Image 1 (cartoon, helix red, strand yellow):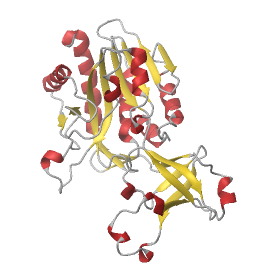
Image 2 (cartoon, rainbow, N blue to C red):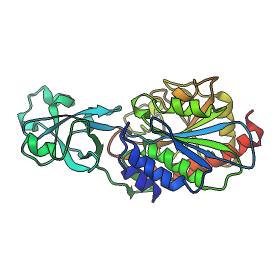
Image 3 (tube, rainbow, N blue to C red):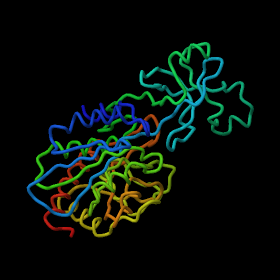
Image 4 (cartoon, one colour):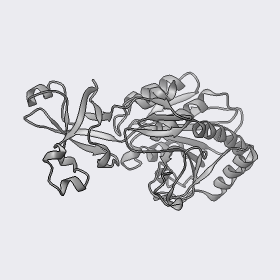
Length: 340
């Protein structure tokens, strides 16, 4: 299954090659042209019989993760974070390190040795280590080197009522939707970009958009979901099962009102469940794309994901399917003249 392959691949920001290779293998026979730019973005052109506004669809390949920063005399490994990770989710997690995916476990001082004040707060990164089962620096250095990327070890699992558990649904879910679109028979001309390094400052999207110079850009994302009982209703950014999330504003973008109005109308006309992303925290590739050259009208369509930026993201398959369906219908409406 495509989404399983994508989420189980390693692709921490700046190290997206494994994910990029999967995507190229999936799309190469369905597009007219693709290239890998200097920083690793895949930029795709799929020609169609119908012309319209120059359109770019973007989804980022990278995920949050860790990097080896030091190897202690004991053989234990110290690390730094890559992207925004809540340090509370790190203790006791399984990880894979480097190109050879050496297995390890994140550990810390046992609770019965912690001071009372240490037990009341999340352990700092400097208090954590990774154990790969070696007993000396020399043994570890045979397998690991400083600068190696570290990914969470988390399998794709379907469970419960249409739910999926995996790592990196932000944003392999967007990549999956975009791949399936490119594999389909579409009548319109469009560009797509699978971008790098979104999680460390939207770094790949700017160069990709500069290359394409789109009139309209659609960002496909996996976004935060906080539908928990102890959170006020207005702070529940999105909810599982309530459909694709349409962004209003975030810390990097004020999304185009005309694009949003058309998207909402398409959803209503086709009885597709949808929701607004209620909060403005965070950002996505639109933050870089909409400011390039003369600017680009942008909109973000996202699949809600619980436990985002952790080893265990959770999404609803129906939200995923509705997002894909809504996107196809929306593109058709745009090329029929819905947006000039």
